[in-house]
Length: 71
Image (cartoon, rainbow, N blue to C red):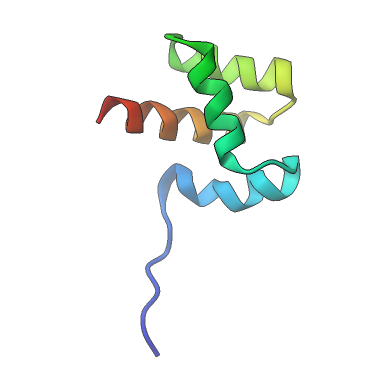
């Protein structure tokens, strides 16, 4: 049986985010992209206050989004 690499880091939250909030993660990345040049916690707070995400889920999405845009 082949070893399947376990997803680590922020992306490990993506399946539960999609299941809990009913949107693919692309939906949330589109919102973050449209929010413009905000700091990490400003983006987290946007997802929490305007869209009802929990802190851990919002933080995971923002961390992944910012890391990808920095690369």
